[in-house]
Length: 201
Image (tube, rainbow, N blue to C red; front, side, top):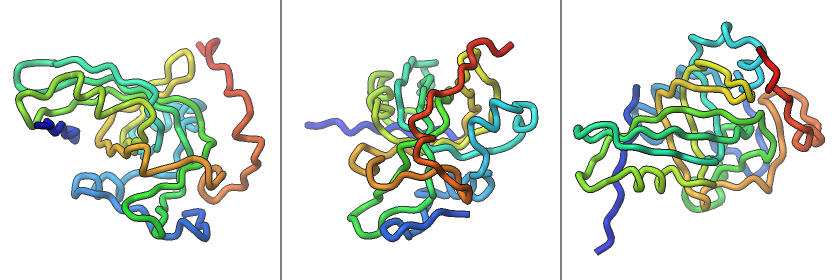
């Protein structure tokens, strides 16, 4: 018998292409609430430049998961997972020509961000290993949260509010290349060296 992992996240202007012209839809009522309130035109570099200006701002960022380190917090059924992501631009559209949800994400973005997630077990036998599998490297996540800090290496820390995960088969970064919503984009931007924040006081 195959055990199905059941973990749920505890909730704490568009560029239109010919293939990607159906608006992104939140999958749950909690996500819909966050989606409607989030400022989707605030980006990681904005936060790095002026953190204090955005510490009360709900943002929605899309990123590819680089790692997730999970531990069981307590016997009450919660798992804590520190999750690191690489930001990618997203036009908040989906490809209506393919079956299921398919997101055409830009290969470009604005560096790394991380969030401490709190997952609630919905089955007693779910473990931290299951959480790390759920948040597997290479999956795509839509993360709703409030900027909290910027690490010395430039990684932006989000105090998360909600998260939605997509498997590798539901997105790609090869079909469309674009930048910030409503702003001109130069293809060279995707290949530029990221800014060095290691000396930032």
